[in-house]
Image (cartoon, rainbow, N blue to C red; front, side, top):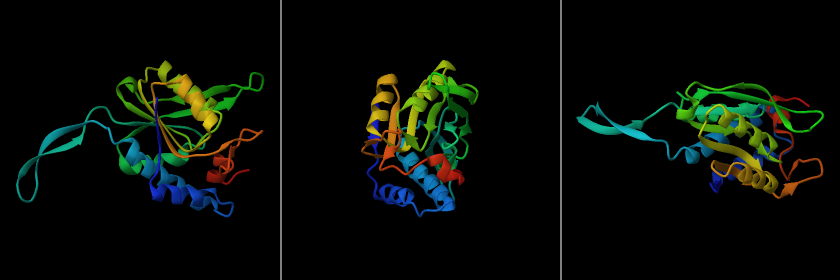
Length: 208
């Protein structure tokens, strides 16, 4: 697995603002979207292109455009929804899928309650998004479900990750690419990332 940890000062700055207790819901949403867009710029650097002939006001020329099946962005519900518009700002034509996961009360393992992916998923570059990579359970399950439905070219983007989650995801799916805004110190006894930013879903949607 390829693991990329972002070093851009704008990403670092925005993550710091995102972490603060005093950052309100509307600002959290804006920051998550902006961070996703900045990370997407890095994560999508290898999108395939093809040359086409166009006419500028000066002359005809051969220039590159995106090529192949449209990008698929797949947020893990619900917090992952906060990152979608950041990617769409870069690639407005991208297709959107959704994966809903919940914890099984008996096994405590992630359980799928909703999965809807774009057609021809096996031909698309897929970017799975979730702000937090904590234990890695949800990320692993989401990638499992995508692969079961034929997905092959998969990237995973998160704003903040714990080392435990990175280790688990890289062992379970060594063939995907992982993009991390910031790698934090550890998980606490309640499986929250430290120093983290709390519950990403609650902060994005203003719930408790």
